Amino acid sequence: MRIDVTSFVPSVVIVENAAHHDSKKAAELCRGIRPGDILVADKAYLDFSFLHGLHERGVFFVLRQKENMSARVTRATPCGERILADEVVDLDGALTAGKYPEELRRVRALVEVDGQDREMTFITNNMDWAAQTIAELYRARWSVEIFFKELKQTLQLADFIGTNENAVKWQIWVGLLVHLLLHYLKHQSKWRHSFSRLAGLVRSAVWMKIDLLQTLSHYGTASPPRRPVATAKQMFLQGFEPNTSRPMGQQV
Image (cartoon, rainbow, N blue to C red; front, top):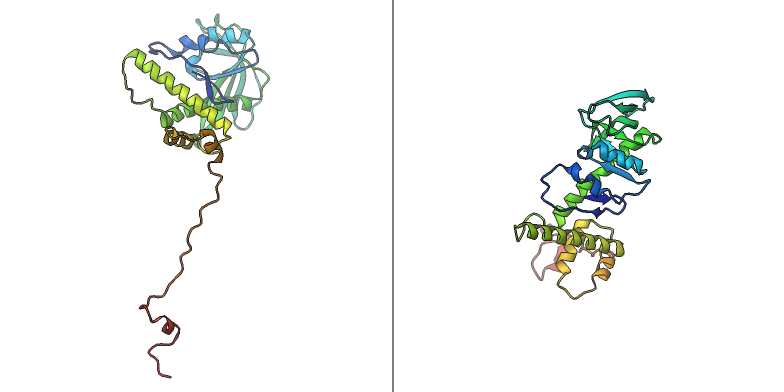
């Protein structure tokens, strides 16, 4: 899946049995990327032939480096506080040197993940960005994880009615189309609340004859309800109210 981080909507989806490595479909996923675009992907898509093809098309990329990547440092740049290394490297591995003959930039940085700093190493073909920009760009990839979490919370993609290949594929496509329609409703109604609340409201109103877009537009705009103010009341028997302000049981 390829997600446009500006709209949070998938632009390319491939539904299949996934019996091969993810990088096998990298070229197909990125076929429509234009010069000047930025691809941010996980280390599973670290295929240097594929990356060199992107470089020749004028596409920038930021990926995590694999631990076994062999490279020779040609020059280095002074580092900042959270940047541990900023280097220009040439691949010198027996299998990789010929696949990507150009220079690569390697940045090692501290990235905050779940409130804790983790050391990560990135590679990119852009030599002009600040090193911190490269680290921050990779954080955009986590929107993919948020997207799948959103799908699982709002759509029925865990239990399938049919279990054969065509049935599963159709249910996935229908779920993705519903997700797209919900995002369109969110955009049209200027929805300001959570996406899960939007999905819950649409689910509860889908069989009602109402203007759904107008309902979403007005959702949350009413004044807060008035809560009754609790007042302390004295406990007494009915008919003895006038005596409640008089001193009782005292000699005058």
